[in-house]
Image (cartoon, rainbow, N blue to C red; front, side, top):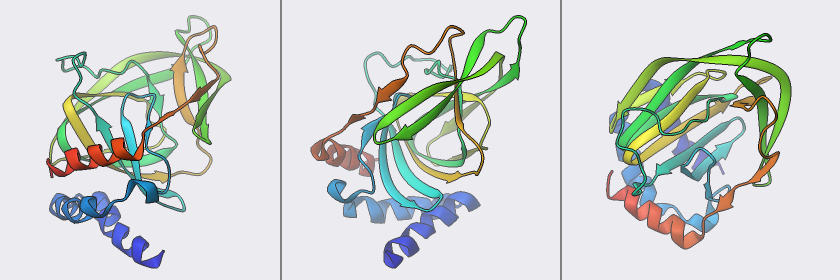
Length: 219
């Protein structure tokens, strides 16, 4: 465990420090050694439309690859493709390996007279996302939009509402650091979320190997 922790800490430091050269070299060295059957958690399709390959988890820190495939229905637009407005309970640093990542910051505030959305917590456990109403009603206005290209790093603070997307095949190396006392939050309908428990679809080891090979081609 100590050897793995020391190795992964190189990527953790580089992401925090904005050291893109080190991150690129770390990926080229690391990807050929990754064995899908030995990852710390299953490779899954996330509700936010990407595939998550978890590389490392230690305490409050996690390191993973997010892959947005280039599909025929991927919109050719500057707007984030996902309509889901959400806020993480963890600080995020993300290095764009290839493609273009899109983020739009959203201004969310409580509103009881003319609300537009309900606010829900999301708890992930055992491959299932549990969605629960908080009882809070809110409005939401679009704010600053970010467009991040291959070789660049972007940061998102915990608790910051945003929606995300991509242009073409996009892969990011993501560092997340959990913050105490915060929940993962998502905006939903006023009359209740359409589902309470949403299982995440797992990818097979062969699918994960194909993704790793694809990512390595772009490093």
